[in-house]
Amino acid sequence: MKYAIFSDIHGNLEALDVMLALCREENVDHYVCLGDVVGYNANPKECLDIVRGLPNLTIVKGNHDEYASNGDNEMEGFNPHAKAAVLWTRAQLTDDDLRYLSELPMRLTIKGANMTIVHATLDGPDAWGYIFDVHNAADNFSYQFTQLCFCGHSHVPLAFSKRPIAMGARPIEEIPLWASENDGSDFKTADMIQLPVEQSVKYLINVGSVGQPRNRDPRASFCIYDTEQKLLTRYRLPYDVALTQQKIREAHLPERLAARLERGI
Image 1: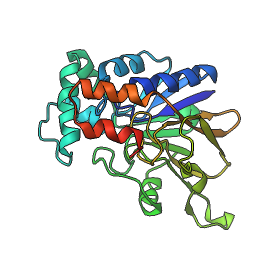
Image 2: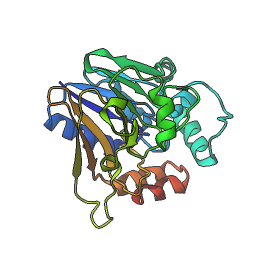
Image 3: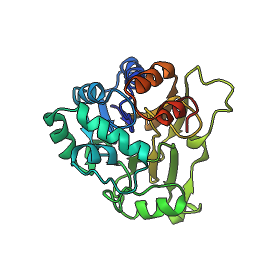
Image 4: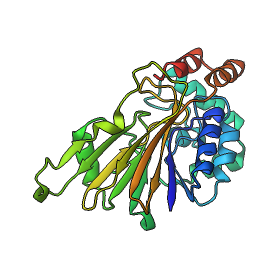
């Protein structure tokens, strides 16, 4: 089976379309969304409709999904740009859309693939914390009872492994390959990074963001997990950033939300 695992679309229709086109080429069987379908960009309704219609979909709630659907106008911890985008997004969605988002679970286990999914962290999924280093990863591993755990939220792709002490290595390590950055010379072509899944090793994988990457690479980031080959492939795909920016400006959303897309920040 092939699982497409993606997060943080944030209403970016152009990036979502490019990702799904590759998934069809790769004959993906299952789709796994790690939350934040909406927020920031100008096509929340269109993106949500597409995601809801995906075959064999498993999905959890992100913090923008939560704030868009729960009627909270304070949004503690949100900067003014994010808050403005959520309020605008809320007005674009139907009552059925809002109900759907509000009822999404915070975390799920996909037993057939030996994976757990969460938007933020397993140790506090509704606290919206971040995983940036091995210390954060260690907290998450304490609550991880499957071989794989996938998360998003930070918009930065990262990966960590936890090996049995008997294997001789440090128990928890970052996997630098997964977070490797483009040198900036070419963001107009696609690339991919492959990571074999070793037996007896646990993995914590942040897949990055489809719709608003923040690792100084503007391309849409996600991964496909092939359960038969035990292989994770992370993709970075170029999309029409200029069109997404145009839509943001036409919707009178904050200019920073448009400007940051081309820089991947």
